[in-house]
Image (cartoon, rainbow, N blue to C red; front, side, top):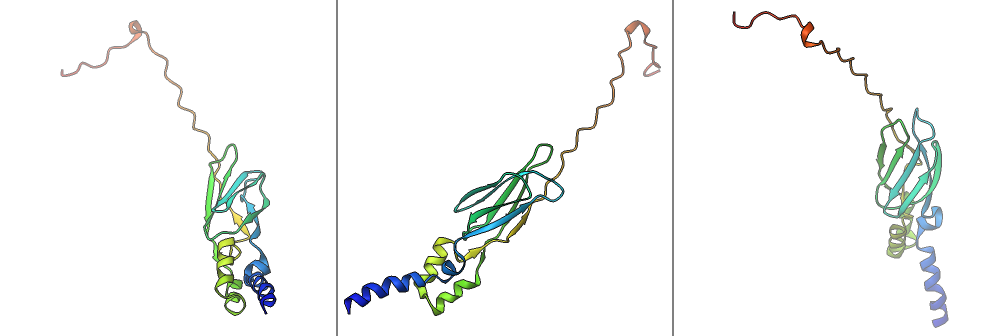
Length: 153
């Protein structure tokens, strides 16, 4: 009987995390910067940081309960930053039937119980060149100045 328990407990624990088994704790995210090509973007959440070297592009991220912040940069453009919420996966509820509390704890702690939108657009704004200042009027030498009207007369 003891041998069955030694085999059965690890087996039940390994089957317990439904979202971990079904979809894992990693997810491929597509990052775009509409109307801007070849921006460099950094994705960041509580599990780490990832880069997309040139938009549009994809990267594999670790899911987390925390939000994902995507920050993109390119010369000639203002830095763009957008935050995306993490959502609870429906698979987590499979733990009620199969894994119970242990499965829920595993899915929540590994990030497998959460997901992000698979497409993350980030708006960027072109930096407008500063308007040229009006040309300065040349200085008039003092001996060529015309006297103005007398003040107070």
